[in-house]
Amino acid sequence: MANCDALQTIQKSCDNNTGGIYKFYVNQQDNVDMTTLTVDAGDDYLIDNLDLVGGADPFIEFEFRRNTSSYTEDSNIDLINGSSFVTQTVNLMFHRRESVKSSAIKVLGSGQQYLSGIVQDANGLYWFFPYLQLTATGEGSGTARADGSKYSITLLAENEFLAYQIEESVVTALTTPAP
Image 1: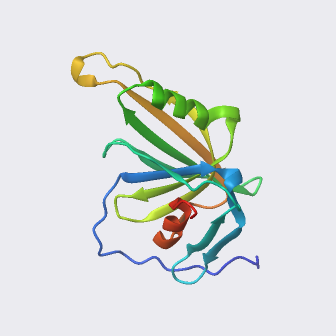
Image 2: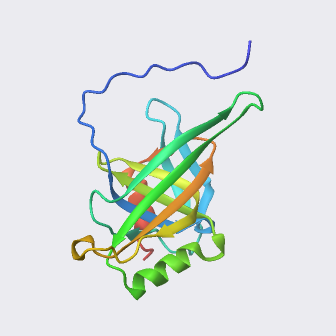
């Protein structure tokens, strides 16, 4: 018999469930000390510790309008090769094209660098996405006046696991500038 983890139950939730994301925080992957990442493997299975590399800048928040951004996670399982990974895609939409946003997007994708992202979903939960890369930008002026101008960006990662939930206190520590 294979030496695999024991199966776990999934119970039906009685909580309200809403889609969409409220916030997105980002940092360069090199600023995140992945050796400090600890996951409570008990019932919660969430990140209860993660630190920045000494002297690194905190995560920054990208602001966007509600009902415009999302994330998806798709499992890729090859039964023949025995390989499995999760493709994680974060799509963000920013209204009103202007030079400051163009510059920020250019820096985000410079050198095809790896990024760490934290998403706060509409259920109030936080999710950690390491090793993201900017893979696409799009949009433009729109056609009609009511269309408005905008940017869309796509960040993509291929990781071994679905995004880990991360405790709010850890997010607060990662997004607060050092004194």
